[in-house]
Structures are given as structure tokens and as C-alpha cells.
Image 1 (tube, rainbow, N blue to C red):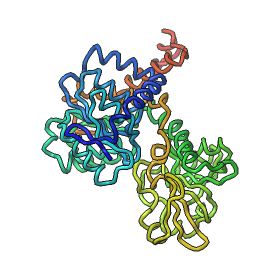
Image 2 (cartoon, helix red, strand yellow):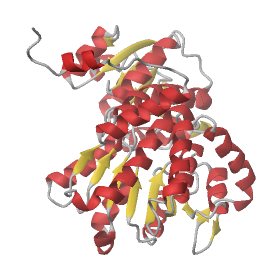
Image 3 (cartoon, rainbow, N blue to C red):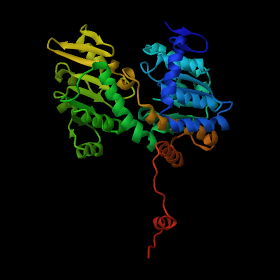
Image 4 (tube, rainbow, N blue to C red):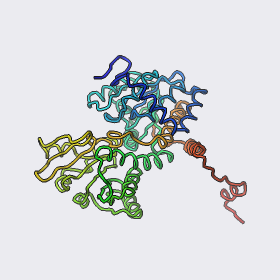
Length: 422
């Protein structure tokens, strides 16, 4: 049963003490965001502004929400995925005075209702992860658009949707593409996704990866991390790609590269990380080994064609373990899907480690502050994070890690900016 009021909708407020302890634990690994929070508390850049954050309701997101609160924002949260909410964290945020509309395992109707409830907050700023809220603003709640200063987007998937709106001339406010920051995708997407995807697969299945053949669909930054970690756990890794440069890179990194059609009969484990639809489709299911496991690490549950798989299995579907479903498509062929085909690192595990989310959410925080200051001077386009913000986050992270780097001498600076070197 969920606890409902006009102000929030969460599973159980009594979980708040557990959530607070876990939020504090994550904060230990988020020194950059902590420094930003302290500065926000002094400067109050969001004073008088309503902020909607649609994200995975995790301990790391909680620390971001508390940073916005410290900066004076009247914040509200909703989930960006039906399976990614940590109910104790949601309770702790409500206890801290931040309304949350999210329950782990909510159905699609509840998920969409929660987005609409959060939109009732009438936001001036939007922090999005997958562009569901930004899309809803441009469709169902156009009446709210005049009051929106701008938004930020966490994921590749969301940025693609935002850029499509810009291309069609319908984007109504500027968007900061947080995912494109070097201090986001180099670290969060690669090291965070790599580790947390493996974590989700292992928590769900408790299988041994060593000796297995893993097929990784997509060799973007997320796919790179997954392939690297799979190999590190002893799996033989095959990469599938549609981009010639990325495919070449995967080959140069030592991975076998081939098509999904050729890889499908060989794989023991399949992980999708493309952001596209039906990456593993009906024809592939028919050729898979008995017992093949499929997991998705992309934002939406569209990469594995679950509708086709369900049609092929008919009544032969059963749950074997939490987040593990078996589809019997023939008497001698049973296929496994993890986490309902949703992003496995948050469906079955806790998502990225706090230390990489420290940089991602530092980008979110500073991008939001930038929009407050500069939004009125920006066009309704998708913008990259300013390079000075990116570099400052990297500098703060190095300081927190007690790592020193060199600086250029005046002579070296002159040399690098001169054309006449004689």
C-alpha cells in the first residue's frame, strides 16, 4: 500500500530513518557536490524558484535534491523509471520537506500519474533523466511552458529527444545537455554503467560470468564500460555496432565485433546499451541458446522486443527469482529476461556508485544555476555544458582525491599560443 496525500505519494514514510542513513553514506563519496551545496547555501541561487527533478530516486539523487533545497529551491521529485525508486530514500526526502511522487515497481499508469502530479508543482526549472517530463510539458501541459526558465538532461536518450524537438522547432526553452559533459560521460557512463550493470546482473542471477560469452549491443560510453567490466570478470565479449568508427574502436580495444545476427546463437548473456528500439528482436529469439540471459542497460525498456517474446512464449512465462523471468518459446528453449527489460543496474541493484554520480550531479547543479543566471540570454536550443564548469568539476574532484597536476609556465603558455616559434 502506498501512502498518499495531496503533497506526495510514496510507499511508506516510516522508512525515512533507513533512507537518511543511506543518503549520508552516499554523501561521503560525493565531495564535489558537498562543496557546491555549501556554496548554494550561502548564495541561494534558486530562491523563489520551483524546481522539478525527474530522476532515479536514489541516495545520490537525494543529495542533489538537498543541494537544490539548500540553494533555496522549492523542489519536488518524481521517478524517471518505474523500477528505479529506493522507497526508503523517497521517505527520507519527504521527511526533509521535499515532496516525492515515486514508488518502486509502480505500473505505467501510476508512473505517468506521478509525472503529472509533479508537474502540478508548476516548475520554473526542470531536471530530467530521459526527457519524460520535458516531453509532457510540450504535449499535455503546454500551459506551464511560459514559466519555465530552462531544463537539464542527464542521459543520451533524453538529449536525442530534446534535439528532435529543437529540430522540429517546438522546443520551448533552453536545455543543458549534462550527459555531454566530459566529467559526466567519460566517468558516469563508462565506469558507473560498467560496474553497476554487472552488479545488477549478478544480484538478479548470482551466475558466474567467467567463461561465459557476453554480447554487448552498442559501443558508446556505456557499452565501453560494460564490455570492459565483462572482460574483467572473465567473460568472452562480442560487441555489435551500427557505427563504423565505434566498431573499429571496439576491434582495436581487443573485442570481437560482428552483427547481432551472427552473435545471437553464441551468446550466453546479452546486454543492450544503444538507446534504440528492438535491438534484440523476434528473429534473434528463435536462434538463441536455451537459457540465454537478456538484460538492458539503456534508459527505456524498448531495446528487447518483449512484446514479440511474450507472443512467442504465450502462457509459458514464469518468475524464477526477483527480477528474473523465464520465457519458454519451445519445449527445449527457455530464454531469461532480467528486470522486465528495464535498466538492470537500477531495477535489480542500486545504480551507479556515488563517487561517479558526484560529478554527474555536480554538472546538474551548476547547469541549473547557470540557467537561472543566463537562461534569458539563451535561445530555445540544446546546449553543451560550458567548458569552464566541466573543468571546475574535474578540478574539485582531483582536490577531493588528493591528486595534484602540473600547471603551465608563462613560457609554455606563450609557446602554445604563438605561431612564430623562432
